Amino acid sequence: MLRNLTIAVIAGALLVCGGCQSQASGKKAAKERWDKTSAKIKLALAQQAYDNRKYDEAAKTVQQCITADPKMPEAHLLLGKLRLIEGRTREAAGELQLAVKLDEKLHEGWYWLGVAAEENRDYQRAYDNYEKALLLEPLNIDYVLAVAEVQVAQNNCSEAVKLLSEGMTALPRDVSLKVAAADLMLRVGRSDRAIDLYKHAMLMTSDNDDIAEPLGYCYLFSGKWAEASDIFDALAAKSRDEQHRKIYLQAAALCNMNSGRYDRALQCYGKLSVEQRDNAEIWVKMGQAALGAGMTKRALECGRKAIVLRPGYADAIAIIGCAQYVSGDYAAAARTFEGITIAKNSKGFSLLMKARCYEQLGETKRAKEVYRKALEANPGSELGEYLAKGKDITDSRLSSGD
Image (cartoon, rainbow, N blue to C red; front, side, top):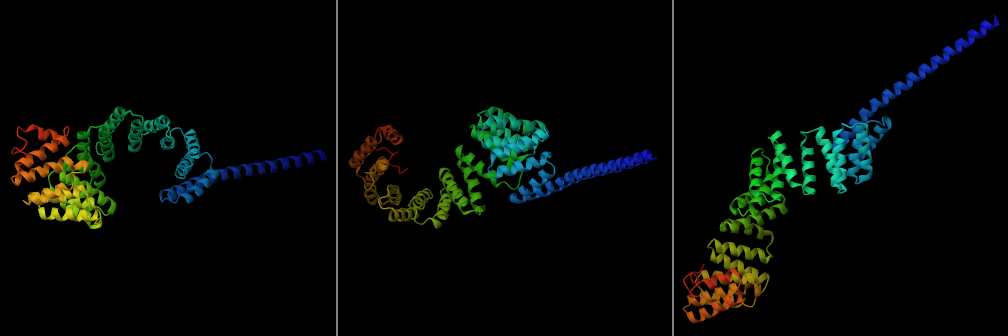
């Protein structure tokens, strides 16, 4: 009887212990399920903070997420991105490597590993990582552009062109690919193709100022001055950033001068002079534009203003002399050009203009002498070649005033 009682007690104890173990296992499983659920919630909150640029808050929350579920690849991905923002590249790479180890198909993880490698100028590793991301997501624009950029950094421009061309074929309505391809075409010297791509990209979007600027420079580098001036004139008119507006006005003025639109160039320099009234160079350029536009009096005023700001400024003296010559005051112009014959860079031009003044005054012998001095001063220059062509150095081509 005692034996039976003992067996019953032991059996009861075993049942109780078994029940405790079963209950403990259940609690552990429930906790693990809760941790994983809370980790997903925390990851969503951390991502939201990241998107709102609250990086400290995002880092704190994602750390809690990793504590709750250390094997969540997306959490390590986000922490890696945050470490990159903080400039902690090595730690970032560690987190990102862990993310792709946990999930080899996490394409964003491979992409950001590429970013980390590129920051360290390890372009081959960057390329390898970007390629893995692109293989997983072939139509991801960011990945296409990243691979192309690294190819360019490695001087594989032909491969980059091929990749971007394939991308444009697969995604014909994507503006960023066309702009990237245009940038690359300009970089490798294919400016006509770059212009076509920029123009096409502009037609595809209404917000095209960021495209118009490189298109303008593309026209400028190609010597298409009129097209470039139209672009920069429009950008200057719309710009609300004073520094950008100044750059656009300078570019527009240059292009207008080279395209013979002197009145428009004069307007540009006039706007620039409002805030640069003490800049003698602006006044000289304004004077040059005024001369081109036939506004002789305005040119004379600009030259004199520049001389006040910078006494002895050869370019300003030349503006004054040219204005006097065009006005028919040849004696005054000759005296003005006499003042810059000692300036090395201006000697040939000033001698040429002084000789023309003497010719207009009927002093032919004196004019011939000064023409020859101009030729001696610039024997191998374009001016020298021009002077040397005539049978008579005082022929009508030189005395026309051009």
